[in-house]
Structure formats: C-alpha cells, structure tokens
Length: 65
Image (cartoon, rainbow, N blue to C red; front, top):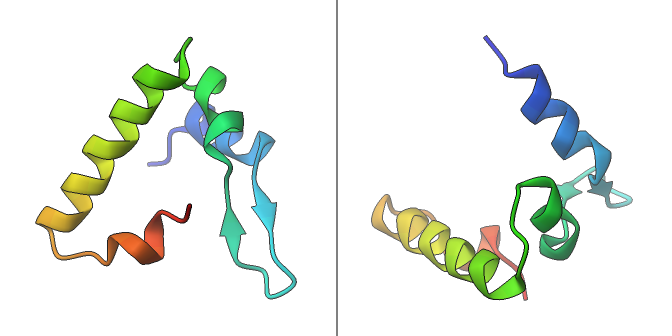
C-alpha cells in the first residue's frame, strides 16, 4: 500500500524531462523532508549514496551533481 502523504510531497516538486524521466532537486526536497539546513540534508544524501553503493546500485546514475 502506498503512503499517500509521501507520494504527494514528492509530486509537488517532481520535474520531468522531454523523455518523461522523473527527477527532483535536492534543495526543493530539503524543506519538504524536514531539514532546516543544507549541511544536515547533504549528510543524509551522502548516507543514501552509501546505501545505494552497498546494494550494488550505480550511484552516479541515481545522484547527479
């Protein structure tokens, strides 16, 4: 079952390319996810990157500069 609140939050700031690929900007997600400073959110992003790497995902394809 989907969490409607989370889905709605992400839909608020979702962007799409001409090829319908979805993407989000970290600075737009930051306040919606409850982070008040960039430093704290950047730490969370780094932990997410490490988690992706640990399960064999290509971090450079999931997190763009």
